[in-house]
Image (cartoon, rainbow, N blue to C red; front, side, top):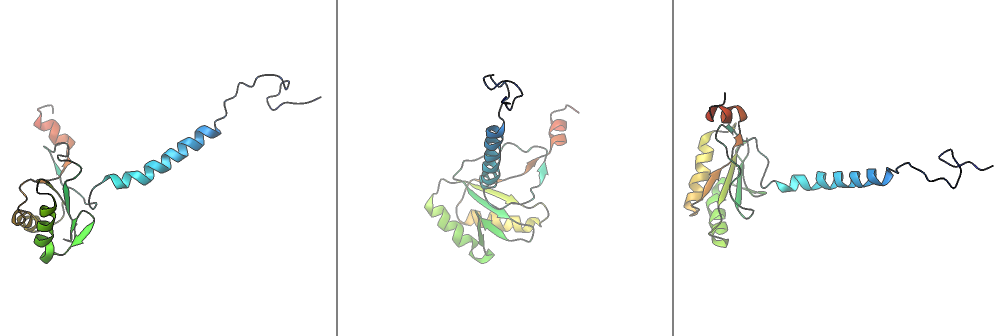
Amino acid sequence: MAFGAGGGSPDEVKGDINVTPLVDVCLVLLIIFMVVTPMLQAGVDVLLPAGPHAEKKPGETGDLSISIKQDGTVFVGQNWIPDKDLVTYLRAEYQKDPARKVMMKADKRINFGKVRMVLKAANEAQFTGVSILTENQQAGTEMAKGRM
């Protein structure tokens, strides 16, 4: 007498679903998302200030990302640029594509003088469109709309 894995006869159709391939596919997708997600952010990660009137990120994918970290270091894209070379570097970037806009991310814990210095450098490099990125403050948005 032979016994099947399902407890019935060997000719009986099994009604169980094999979930092993489903788990394998889900794990592969999870790994792909874990690898790709950090690459979606442009520039260096900083703690952005929150504002009640923050809107969806303006701009396009080819825009120039300038980040100012808490210690005052300035990054253009992923490249660290010393303060003395910032205007020269931004002029070279402007010459590559004058239609590009600048997206500036500044850590909320730094002195505004550093932000002013970077804005001045972008102005000297002839960039006309500079946006300062902030995070959306939910309660402030609701108050601004008169819902609270």
